[in-house]
Amino acid sequence: MTVSHCQDACAERSYVYAGLEAGAECYCGNRLPAMSVGLEECNHECKGEKGSVCGAVDRLSVYRVDELQPGSRKRRTATYRGCFRLPENITHAFPSSLIQANVTVETCSGFCSQKEFPLAIL
Image (cartoon, rainbow, N blue to C red; front, side):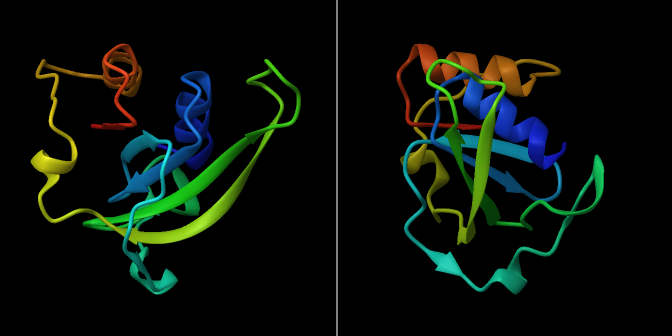
């Protein structure tokens, strides 16, 4: 996972925020998590991008994905919004799941988009 790959996946589905956890997990949503924490708590390097930070265990590095041109997903900026704690009761916060072997970010995000959920978690 890379920061730009996660941002692209979220932008393609019209989400406002891209969050990365534990070096390899990408989440998309339209609201910031409630609990921000110190930037030093997001300390896992992205598994697909040396030198970039992709959250930590139970911590999300969150970026706001802004489009530069209406309707264009290719030209945009991403603004780092900070490090956030995951909700304690993940099943309450994210009540639906898709269980299948080798699920991709695209499959997970597409499933959640169809259900009009504000966040997709893989």
